[in-house]
Image (cartoon, rainbow, N blue to C red; front, side, top):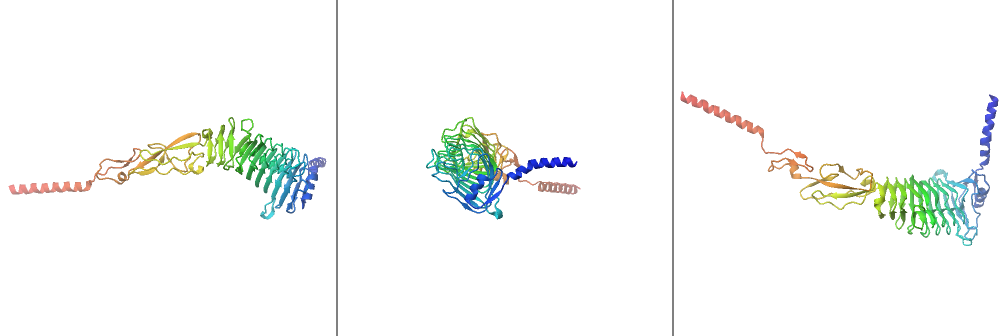
Length: 463
């Protein structure tokens, strides 16, 4: 038994020992210490900020070494990284090239919020372009970037993504689980995704608040750089994502080329996706985009393919080819049913008027009648309100019919012996004849008694 225990203990030591030895978590108090820790700490280590740190163009480059996976803990502090525009390498503000991994977290004590500002080199002297805010340098694709918390602000250099590839670098794998992220691509590069002429990679935004845009509208806010393909993008239920900075750019998809089924990438939304004015999302023929969350469309949704909408679309601008929205897509028509109907409401891209944030139809009008509501049939049917589930299975149309009642008939009319009938043919009240049966019976009995008295009087007179 002791021998077996000893063997087991040795096995545990072989597994656990080296892992524990490999980790060398450390706290840093300067940009130089931070750069050195990134360069020398073993893979798997966590590097924590011990103070607010501000770098500049002359500071050491902070970059994850090849084959390493590191964690940066902002620890409630602010970190500013600015790459040198004159560096011929054109590095990223925070380097995470292909083949490496960086997790950014914030274990901020006492409610403080850690922050990271990262600006890539513009690449003034590089043979091409610049670096990403976080990700690849000039000519480098991005590696694996995971953001779990903090306030993250990034700006790519010329042709470099805000988060993703540098000039001619693809987007890598980006996962955002929390925090507040504002990512702006440099000229011709995505906010999150590819550098110039490269695809957006794989992007999962599971939580947090994300705002992505570009510097000149020549790339996707999230997706490909200029002439690059889009990303495989998924937005989780806990995320709020704004795509586009109002520069007429593509919110999601490829960068400044016609979207088709080979270059769009993919998009699924279970959170809140916001498309600002002057921006667009083109869904090409052959592509199915799914929405089980909320899309707030203030720009243009051009749908040549399919938008499978089991959630909500709050549309204040333009949906091209709305017939290609399936699921929740109801065109409501109004029939005054003998009266005058108001203007029909906007298309309802949700299960209810209430969820779609569309005003419920106003009352119809008819002289001398009371409006009783909107119903699914001209006679009978179910009443519809702002909270009524309109069902799925669109695109479809739904006609709502006004129902009426006659106030005079409901109150009773002595000049009308007929039964008052409510809208839909159902009897409202019984007819009122104006006669009372009790006085009639009493009068008849009195007449009979008077007749008997006269008869007895005649008999007495005859005798």
